[in-house]
Length: 130
Image (cartoon, rainbow, N blue to C red; front, side, top):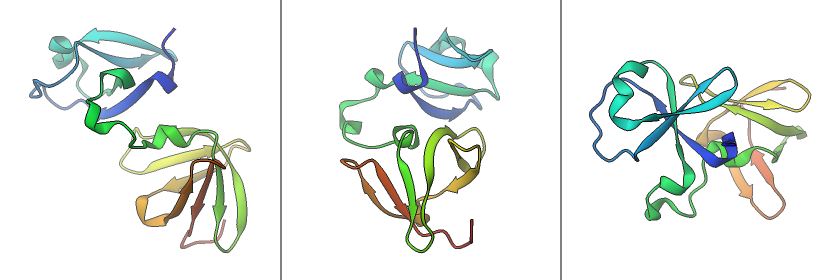
């Protein structure tokens, strides 16, 4: 079964103009990822689309996505440890991390100080108090 860890979000489908799509894209339906042929995406406008990580071009190898941060601990440079990321929501313009305790925090490149892949720690500086 395909899980979110197998996929990368390519955003919300607006129009069919990309000839470089892999043969299949996936859309979340009732909590499951359902495959659709790329040529049929016109009927899926407005839905978030995913592709298999293995379908991403080789030049993207080694690059992290927001989804790669699931399981990482967030540490603020002033507040200290905040929590562990349980889920990432990229369905809106503002990417949100849901922590294991249910709190949601915004994720933005400007907040990130360091990503320690070995320790699975995301060090940030939030411009607000949590």
